[in-house]
Amino acid sequence: MVGTLSGADFDAEVAEIRSAIVNEVNELGETALFTAAEKGHLDIVKELLQYSTKEGMTMKNRSGFDPFHIAASQGHEDILTAIVQVLLNHDPGLSKTVGQSNATPIIPAATRRHIGIVNVLLSTDSSSLEITRSNGKNALHLAARQGHVEIVKALLRKDPQLARRKIKKRQTAMHMAVKGTSCEW
Image (cartoon, rainbow, N blue to C red; front, side, top):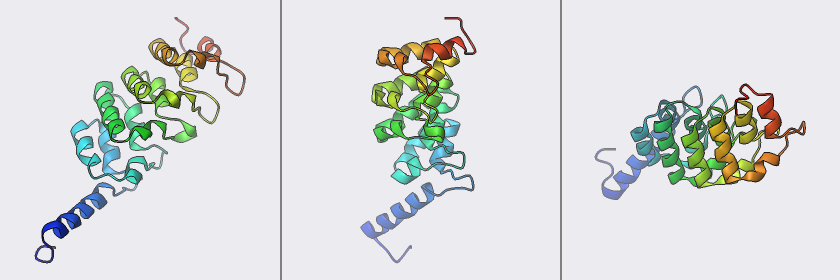
């Protein structure tokens, strides 16, 4: 490249190479953005987003997760809440991406009791509450089943009618809570 291109042509070629490298997929189907989100590296996520394509941001790995889903479901909640916010600032539509079993990012966040991430997702676009997993369960059903009271309250504050939604077996979140792992409400 050196000596063959100059100025804007050189910059364009470097940008194309940078984007190709950033969006390269490893043997697990993961980009560098996926790994940075999974490991909680906020500054790296911010840097990689500048060069990530829409396809690279929403590409699913072999396990069926994209970078946004993995950030919403991992530990280190304070760091990952910031990563989720950065990703949503970059593309608010990520809140509606689906992973395994048609789960939107709010479902693993609610299931794993990540209240900060749930609140960020709810403040960005609460319509993802309407999207259920393939078995009909929504974030409220799953949080209630596991006794995550703080998550249940946050979800119901956003949409009180969510409590009336039934899964395929005609069970509400209350049914799930009663047969769940913790009934100390």
